[in-house]
Length: 444
Ligand SMILES: OCc1cccc(Br)n1
Image 1: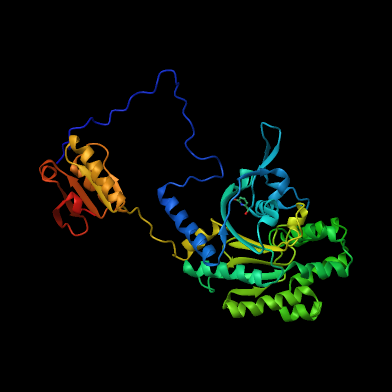
Image 2 (image 1 turned 180 degrees about the vertical axis):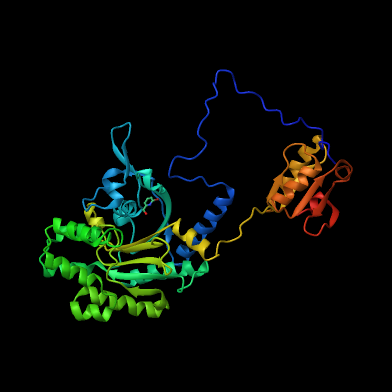
């Protein structure tokens, strides 16, 4: 009926207290950041649940760290973009702090803090918001959520093979196949072996990697210029760029020989990939170095084979990060997987899940004085593990049915006077229209 069931007050809203002057605020989130209204939050939870379920199925334990860290954790001198875009400031205690741009340094910090109280190997995962501050000219986001998995304390390539297997497992769970996505795999030891041939000082290694990582983003003569500025000769640069164009492990072995660690590690990884069953997902590509200075060995990145999107994920071995923070020289490897590109890919592939609000019951009092009774009915159902949307004020039945449809409620429980007098409530199964009365203590 159109009238208010229970005759409650119409939606009168009291004016703000006169001492608070109304100051119209911008209701949008800060530039480069996102709100997650319910429909977006359902998709985010769906994605993060997959991240967590895969991590747990690989025996990893979840960890987290403060979004705010000491700036010192991220101050590296290799010219990384992540450093140039650090969201850093001085707090009220005059401390230099930063919103974390990645999770790995925090993880390294916690491992060192735990010291001997944890036994290696550690298999930790995290899903955390990371930040960067870049000029909005490029209109890019300033925050994203990253899934990380890290293995601490395993020097062998088996660890990297396990990590790639976990990402392949995730892709399969969400319907992405090896025809949609691949991993370019290489090792920074390739680059290291070439630099050693030209006696390039080890301390330039990180800087060279950061420059090489820009290879597909800036013109090659800019790359050459930057490498020259590090003191590399024309010949060394030519040779290095030539090696980095190699896409076959056999060719790489011809150039570097079979004795070096780079070739041995990569051959081992490709052999393990066979055993894990994901050979079709990976390919050797010497140009992959990744942009983080601390990688020291195998590096990999997930890419969409249509080449429309930025890297989906990336990772690698970082055997000396902990020691650069003053910890023991513990071997480690891990990856980061952002929450944005994967959603773009799933959209492209028509793989986004249909996620609607689902509630099992909507409970409504038919008279205002039965609100308490309705609360008791809702509590009983909730104690039995049922979800209940309790109508909290007197509303027309038409409104209740509309809300039940919007929330995809399975059952409508009406608390009416005559039924309640007999200890009953009426139930309507909204999919079939079936309607019946039931004793309250039989309701479940
Ligand atoms: O992938 C680099 C990165 C780091 C922090 C925040 C965002 Br958005 N992107």
